[in-house]
Image (cartoon, rainbow, N blue to C red; front, side, top):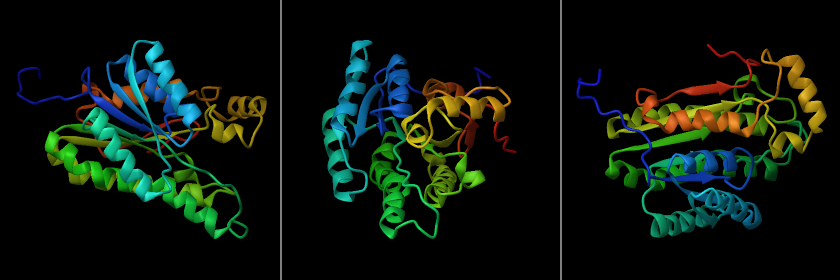
Length: 259
């Protein structure tokens, strides 16, 4: 295989990776893990406090990170953040569309404003980010995109049709973009995490209850952690995943077993 002439590209030391929602949870874990592999991290977050803390932690461990504040519900803010990031750090090798919102409510009680906010942040923002950065990544001739979906995309969820719909859309965007960009040497995959100890589930359920539920439901008998999902991201950006694109990879302790 080593002599077949096929280029097996992956993250190289010095490559820049944009992580949206990099201020906490999965985003912070992605930032720390990829920085440990030599990536320069552009931490995007709406919270200056959280984004600055992730940046501090990356730098404390000897990595390179810069924080860029952005409201992903605002297309103009996205454009400005892309321009600032490119000016400061150059063209990204990787983009991790991690940021999302989850206003909860049954369909009949969910406001149009909450529905539209969920669409803007969870699916329109990734579309705009990739549409704008795409030409630069194509010119570069290499790159990786990771989009964060959710188990709710395949299971649905009560009091969360807005969120589930956007995460199902992320899976479709992933497959479509993988087909369009494969010829340019850019791989596009999605991660489908199960319930993990991040701010979103903790906002609705006490931590002890999350642990108890996971112990009963998951074949592996525990809840997920951001570091678990970051390990999968590390694989997907690496040369070990050079033959992998257009996939939605579930990591959920066996709670949902996809075909």
